[in-house]
Image (cartoon, rainbow, N blue to C red; front, top):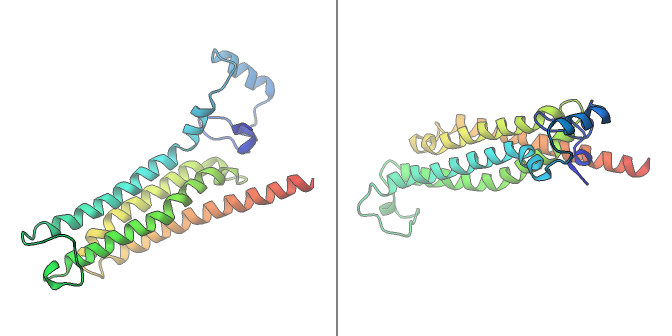
Length: 199
């Protein structure tokens, strides 16, 4: 099974299933490129490039939160490992350290849900009719929005519990959009698979 069989849409920069080009046009394009064969790995790399970019951005935003908490933690010269959030002696008087710790843990927890959904989005959302062409970079853009607000979440929560609401809400909206696109792509693929079996 090649890429054309897997994805019935035409994506920018590479070809997939339901292309508007005829067999003759594809053959001519292959001949003009100097090679009659395609590189499946290169096609997969292009297809999943938005997911790869988004993955790095999300992970970087989680690491940024850890560093933000560390800046407060290590400013206290008397701090001793391991961190015990239930002890007053392990927290600053303003509570910034404890709130930052909770926020950074929240970022890591949600990354566990978001990253698999992002890759499911990248794999299945391009199969959606009419909008499939736009789905790969739509997922990439959503992941960057997620990472931006994820990065803002820890400093905002460290400032105050109220300040966390804006980045938390917008990060959640980006997550829901990624999840919806992934779910829609999977459902469409399941329906198409059942239809192909019946027909």
